[in-house]
Image 1 (tube, chains in turn red, blue):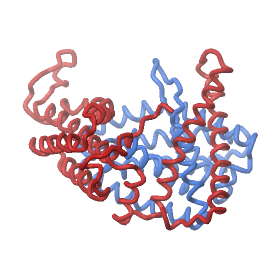
Image 2 (image 1 turned 180 degrees about the vertical axis):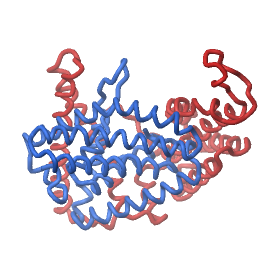
Image 3 (image 1 turned 30 degrees about the vertical axis):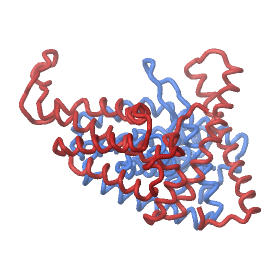
Image 4 (image 1 turned 30 degrees about the horizontal axis):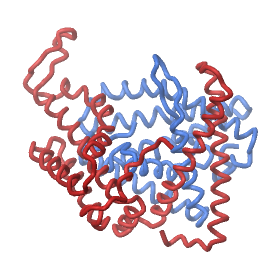
Length: 226
Length: 215
């Protein structure tokens, strides 16, 4: 399977990995809440969050490239959605785009806000990556149970996580099967393949759920334990 | 459409986290009452199904592509509340394990894609089915439901970004709506063709929703 999961490094051993999941949840949550509490936090908030993150990644002996590359997943959305901020924020005009006349004025405050939003988004995701790279998903769920997240939801998440691997492989089999039978990709004809493929995947998923339920019953499943 | 952290201000994400948690609590209670312990494998495997089917890409315009979202399909087959639960599971896993969408923005993403999408999709599907009862009505109803569900979610996403002061509404609403009006065509076609294929092969699975669902 090609998918890479954020908890790839969670089974390593370090000072950070050995801490209780609850501690790591609090650290990550505190950092993310602090970063996002204000729309435009003073410069030392993201600076401190970044310094703490670098220290934590080093203490956890995680590859820096891994954490910072995974967090970069947030950049395309951030850069595109935020692109209007420099133009629409009140402030001192620092640059005019000649092509658009005086409607397109970039302000210093707008540029600063644009950068702030991107940094906030990037660091917030980096803390999620740090949490998941030092905590196996099942330990994270157990930690969340202590914070009164209902066990029913946590069991659902635990199962969903388990079966994502299975069903992604199932859809890769479907894709391989139609790639082997179908040459070229005409635009509308594709939907004739995609629709029934979704239906087939749904039927297989539903039948799998029934088999799982039968297997769980025969082994004495108890909903209140995860 | 997954909003990362950093784009919503505190009042917006806190309010939507509360609203989202409320909807999820009701959805979870209803699933538990209707299905008891069987809810766990059924809802979770169907969440994994939605996750996997979101890997299906289709061409949009000018060389770009969109991917299937599945919220309306889930709502038509399972009913809107079960779809809320299933889509929430997908969004939580995406936020925590794949970094798609922020953790503080989770309530906003749940509201857009696990509440607005299923309820709008289900509502429009039932409305058109009531007015137009033949085979063509089925196709039109599922196509229109999935299309509007995608566009509605994109619009609420745009409104949230505007309320947060990130982008003016006059810019973000038309941009999000137009882009998703195009992507929604693919979503509508896949949803309608998938439901047609399901009716041909396993019509029994279309009766899962309370009140007859996708019949």
